[in-house]
Figure 1 (cartoon, rainbow, N blue to C red):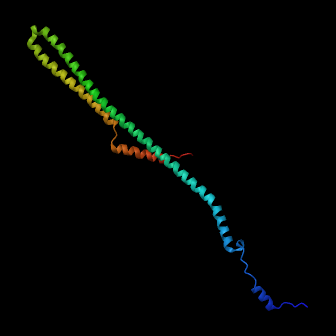
Figure 2 (figure 1 turned 90 degrees about the vertical axis):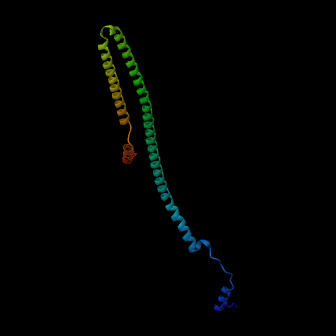
Length: 185
């Protein structure tokens, strides 16, 4: 005879059963974590690519600005060196002019002295006055020529040099022109 189990027997048998642990992949926390990893994986690639593009563009722009600044610096150094060279050349030119004029004065003086020695016997009084007049005239011509050359040289120096304001304006305009250029298109 078989006895059918009663409800109390079933409850008791279930209560005596060992505890069964829940399988990890059936838990809600596991699936939330998996979903999070998938969403982060999907969003990471385009965001990383876009960030990389932006950084590369900025790096290129900074490199170009540095290159342009270096070019401007080199141009300024070349201009400065050229100006210094011209200044040193001007000193030599002035010395050459003065030496040449001294030579011309000496040559003219010797010529006039020779002429005076020849004519001294006949017109000593007239020639003394003429010598003074000629010396003054030559000296005035030399002074005039030296002044003209000096003025011309100073004009070249001044026109070759830029004022600080003009230099600053030139650099500002150059930077403005560089910024207004369209690169690659």
